Image (tube, rainbow, N blue to C red; front, side, top):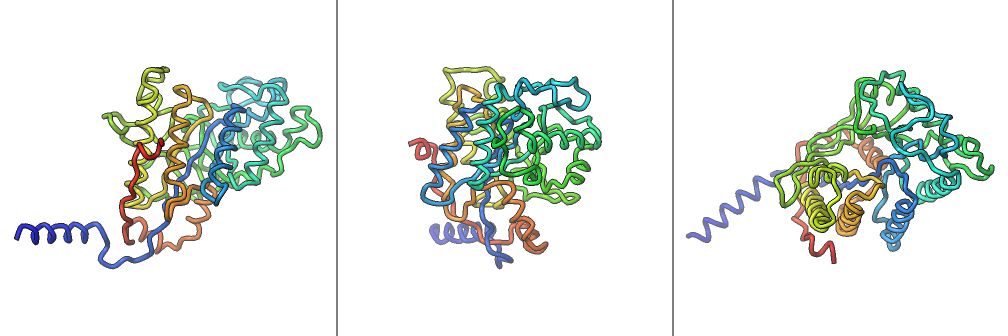
Length: 351
């Protein structure tokens, strides 16, 4: 009697979790890993090598790089840029260093673009533009375009040093500090961007398209093994875990917590709403680089699993644009068969 009762309860729970009649096939599980600022040359090389290794036997992972325009202006050329409401030649983050460092970034950008990764915009000078007008944002976008298109002459580099794509290739944007005020979105639309990644939304929510722009937002997460909350971005882990202080004694713990949190986020969406995962990191090595290692362990674990697409925001926008209104509504409502829970663990991911 007890066994039959347990089976009956299990059947009812299963029915509650799975639609009685699925409206559409189960969507892919998109995982988008994007990087902000993109300054340090050793980090460029690290990610080029990592992606090449992951894709050696297939098409497993591609990244989005939100490039800060100052990375393509050598220190000697800094006077070419003046941000809105700022003095000429100033940025809160470093300019591009020697001209040869700019040349090497150009080589990385060309190689990554040719390999299917995405180059997107993080504006030029890394200012908080929450109070900027649409006209000021338009000026910043124009400056970004000119920096990309004239990177060789701007830095007095040889004629053959140039990007193998122009500014029209850049279709996505994330605001520095997520400083997305009311002036930003009209300027994004007028400039021809396809998506913005500057806001926050629930982890299980499918993206919205607002006034012709897809909103691909970071999400709030609960840090595994703690009671603290954070956003799905490395700097926010750094603040939540250690109040933005380096703590070598606890780095292994912080890395394990990040990896476990990302795996929890993946499992919940993979078996639930199938909403895309949004993860943001920086080139800077917070906590001695342990967050970078946690992200790579996460990518090695989930990228390549059945129905998983670790890809760029541009390709996610392509997918979203190809959906009918009825199919997207079915995704939002969960009217599709659920996937089984994947067997994932921190121990397996770090072997």
